[in-house]
Image (cartoon, rainbow, N blue to C red; front, side, top):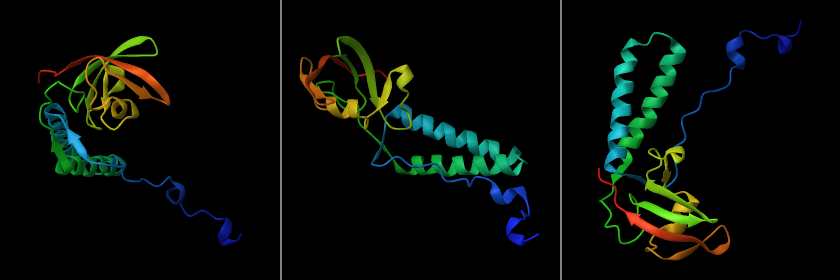
Length: 155
């Protein structure tokens, strides 16, 4: 049989493992976001010495590289004043006839299912710098969003 048709090991055909992609742009964080990143680094550093499986060890090392990079590049943001929509604010607004409330946070802290979205998300960018009562365009529609309330969460 030709060598071209022979597979030496199954390892040769495994999917390559790539680094976890770093979100583009600045790594803005709230105080809570910075604490979450530090906790993730601490957790992974504590986990590494106990790992013996090569696959798990490589995955944990990859994750630790990601979180250490995020910690090193973190830019803590000051607490917003609440006068305009800004990073760290909680915003109540109307979109498509429905009232919603979200908090604008950093990429790693974002959890849309629990009401926090990244400051770089299109919805966040559309509302940035708006004041209570403003109507702002979104998704090609003028006056699509009405800003009802801007609050500064307690930390």
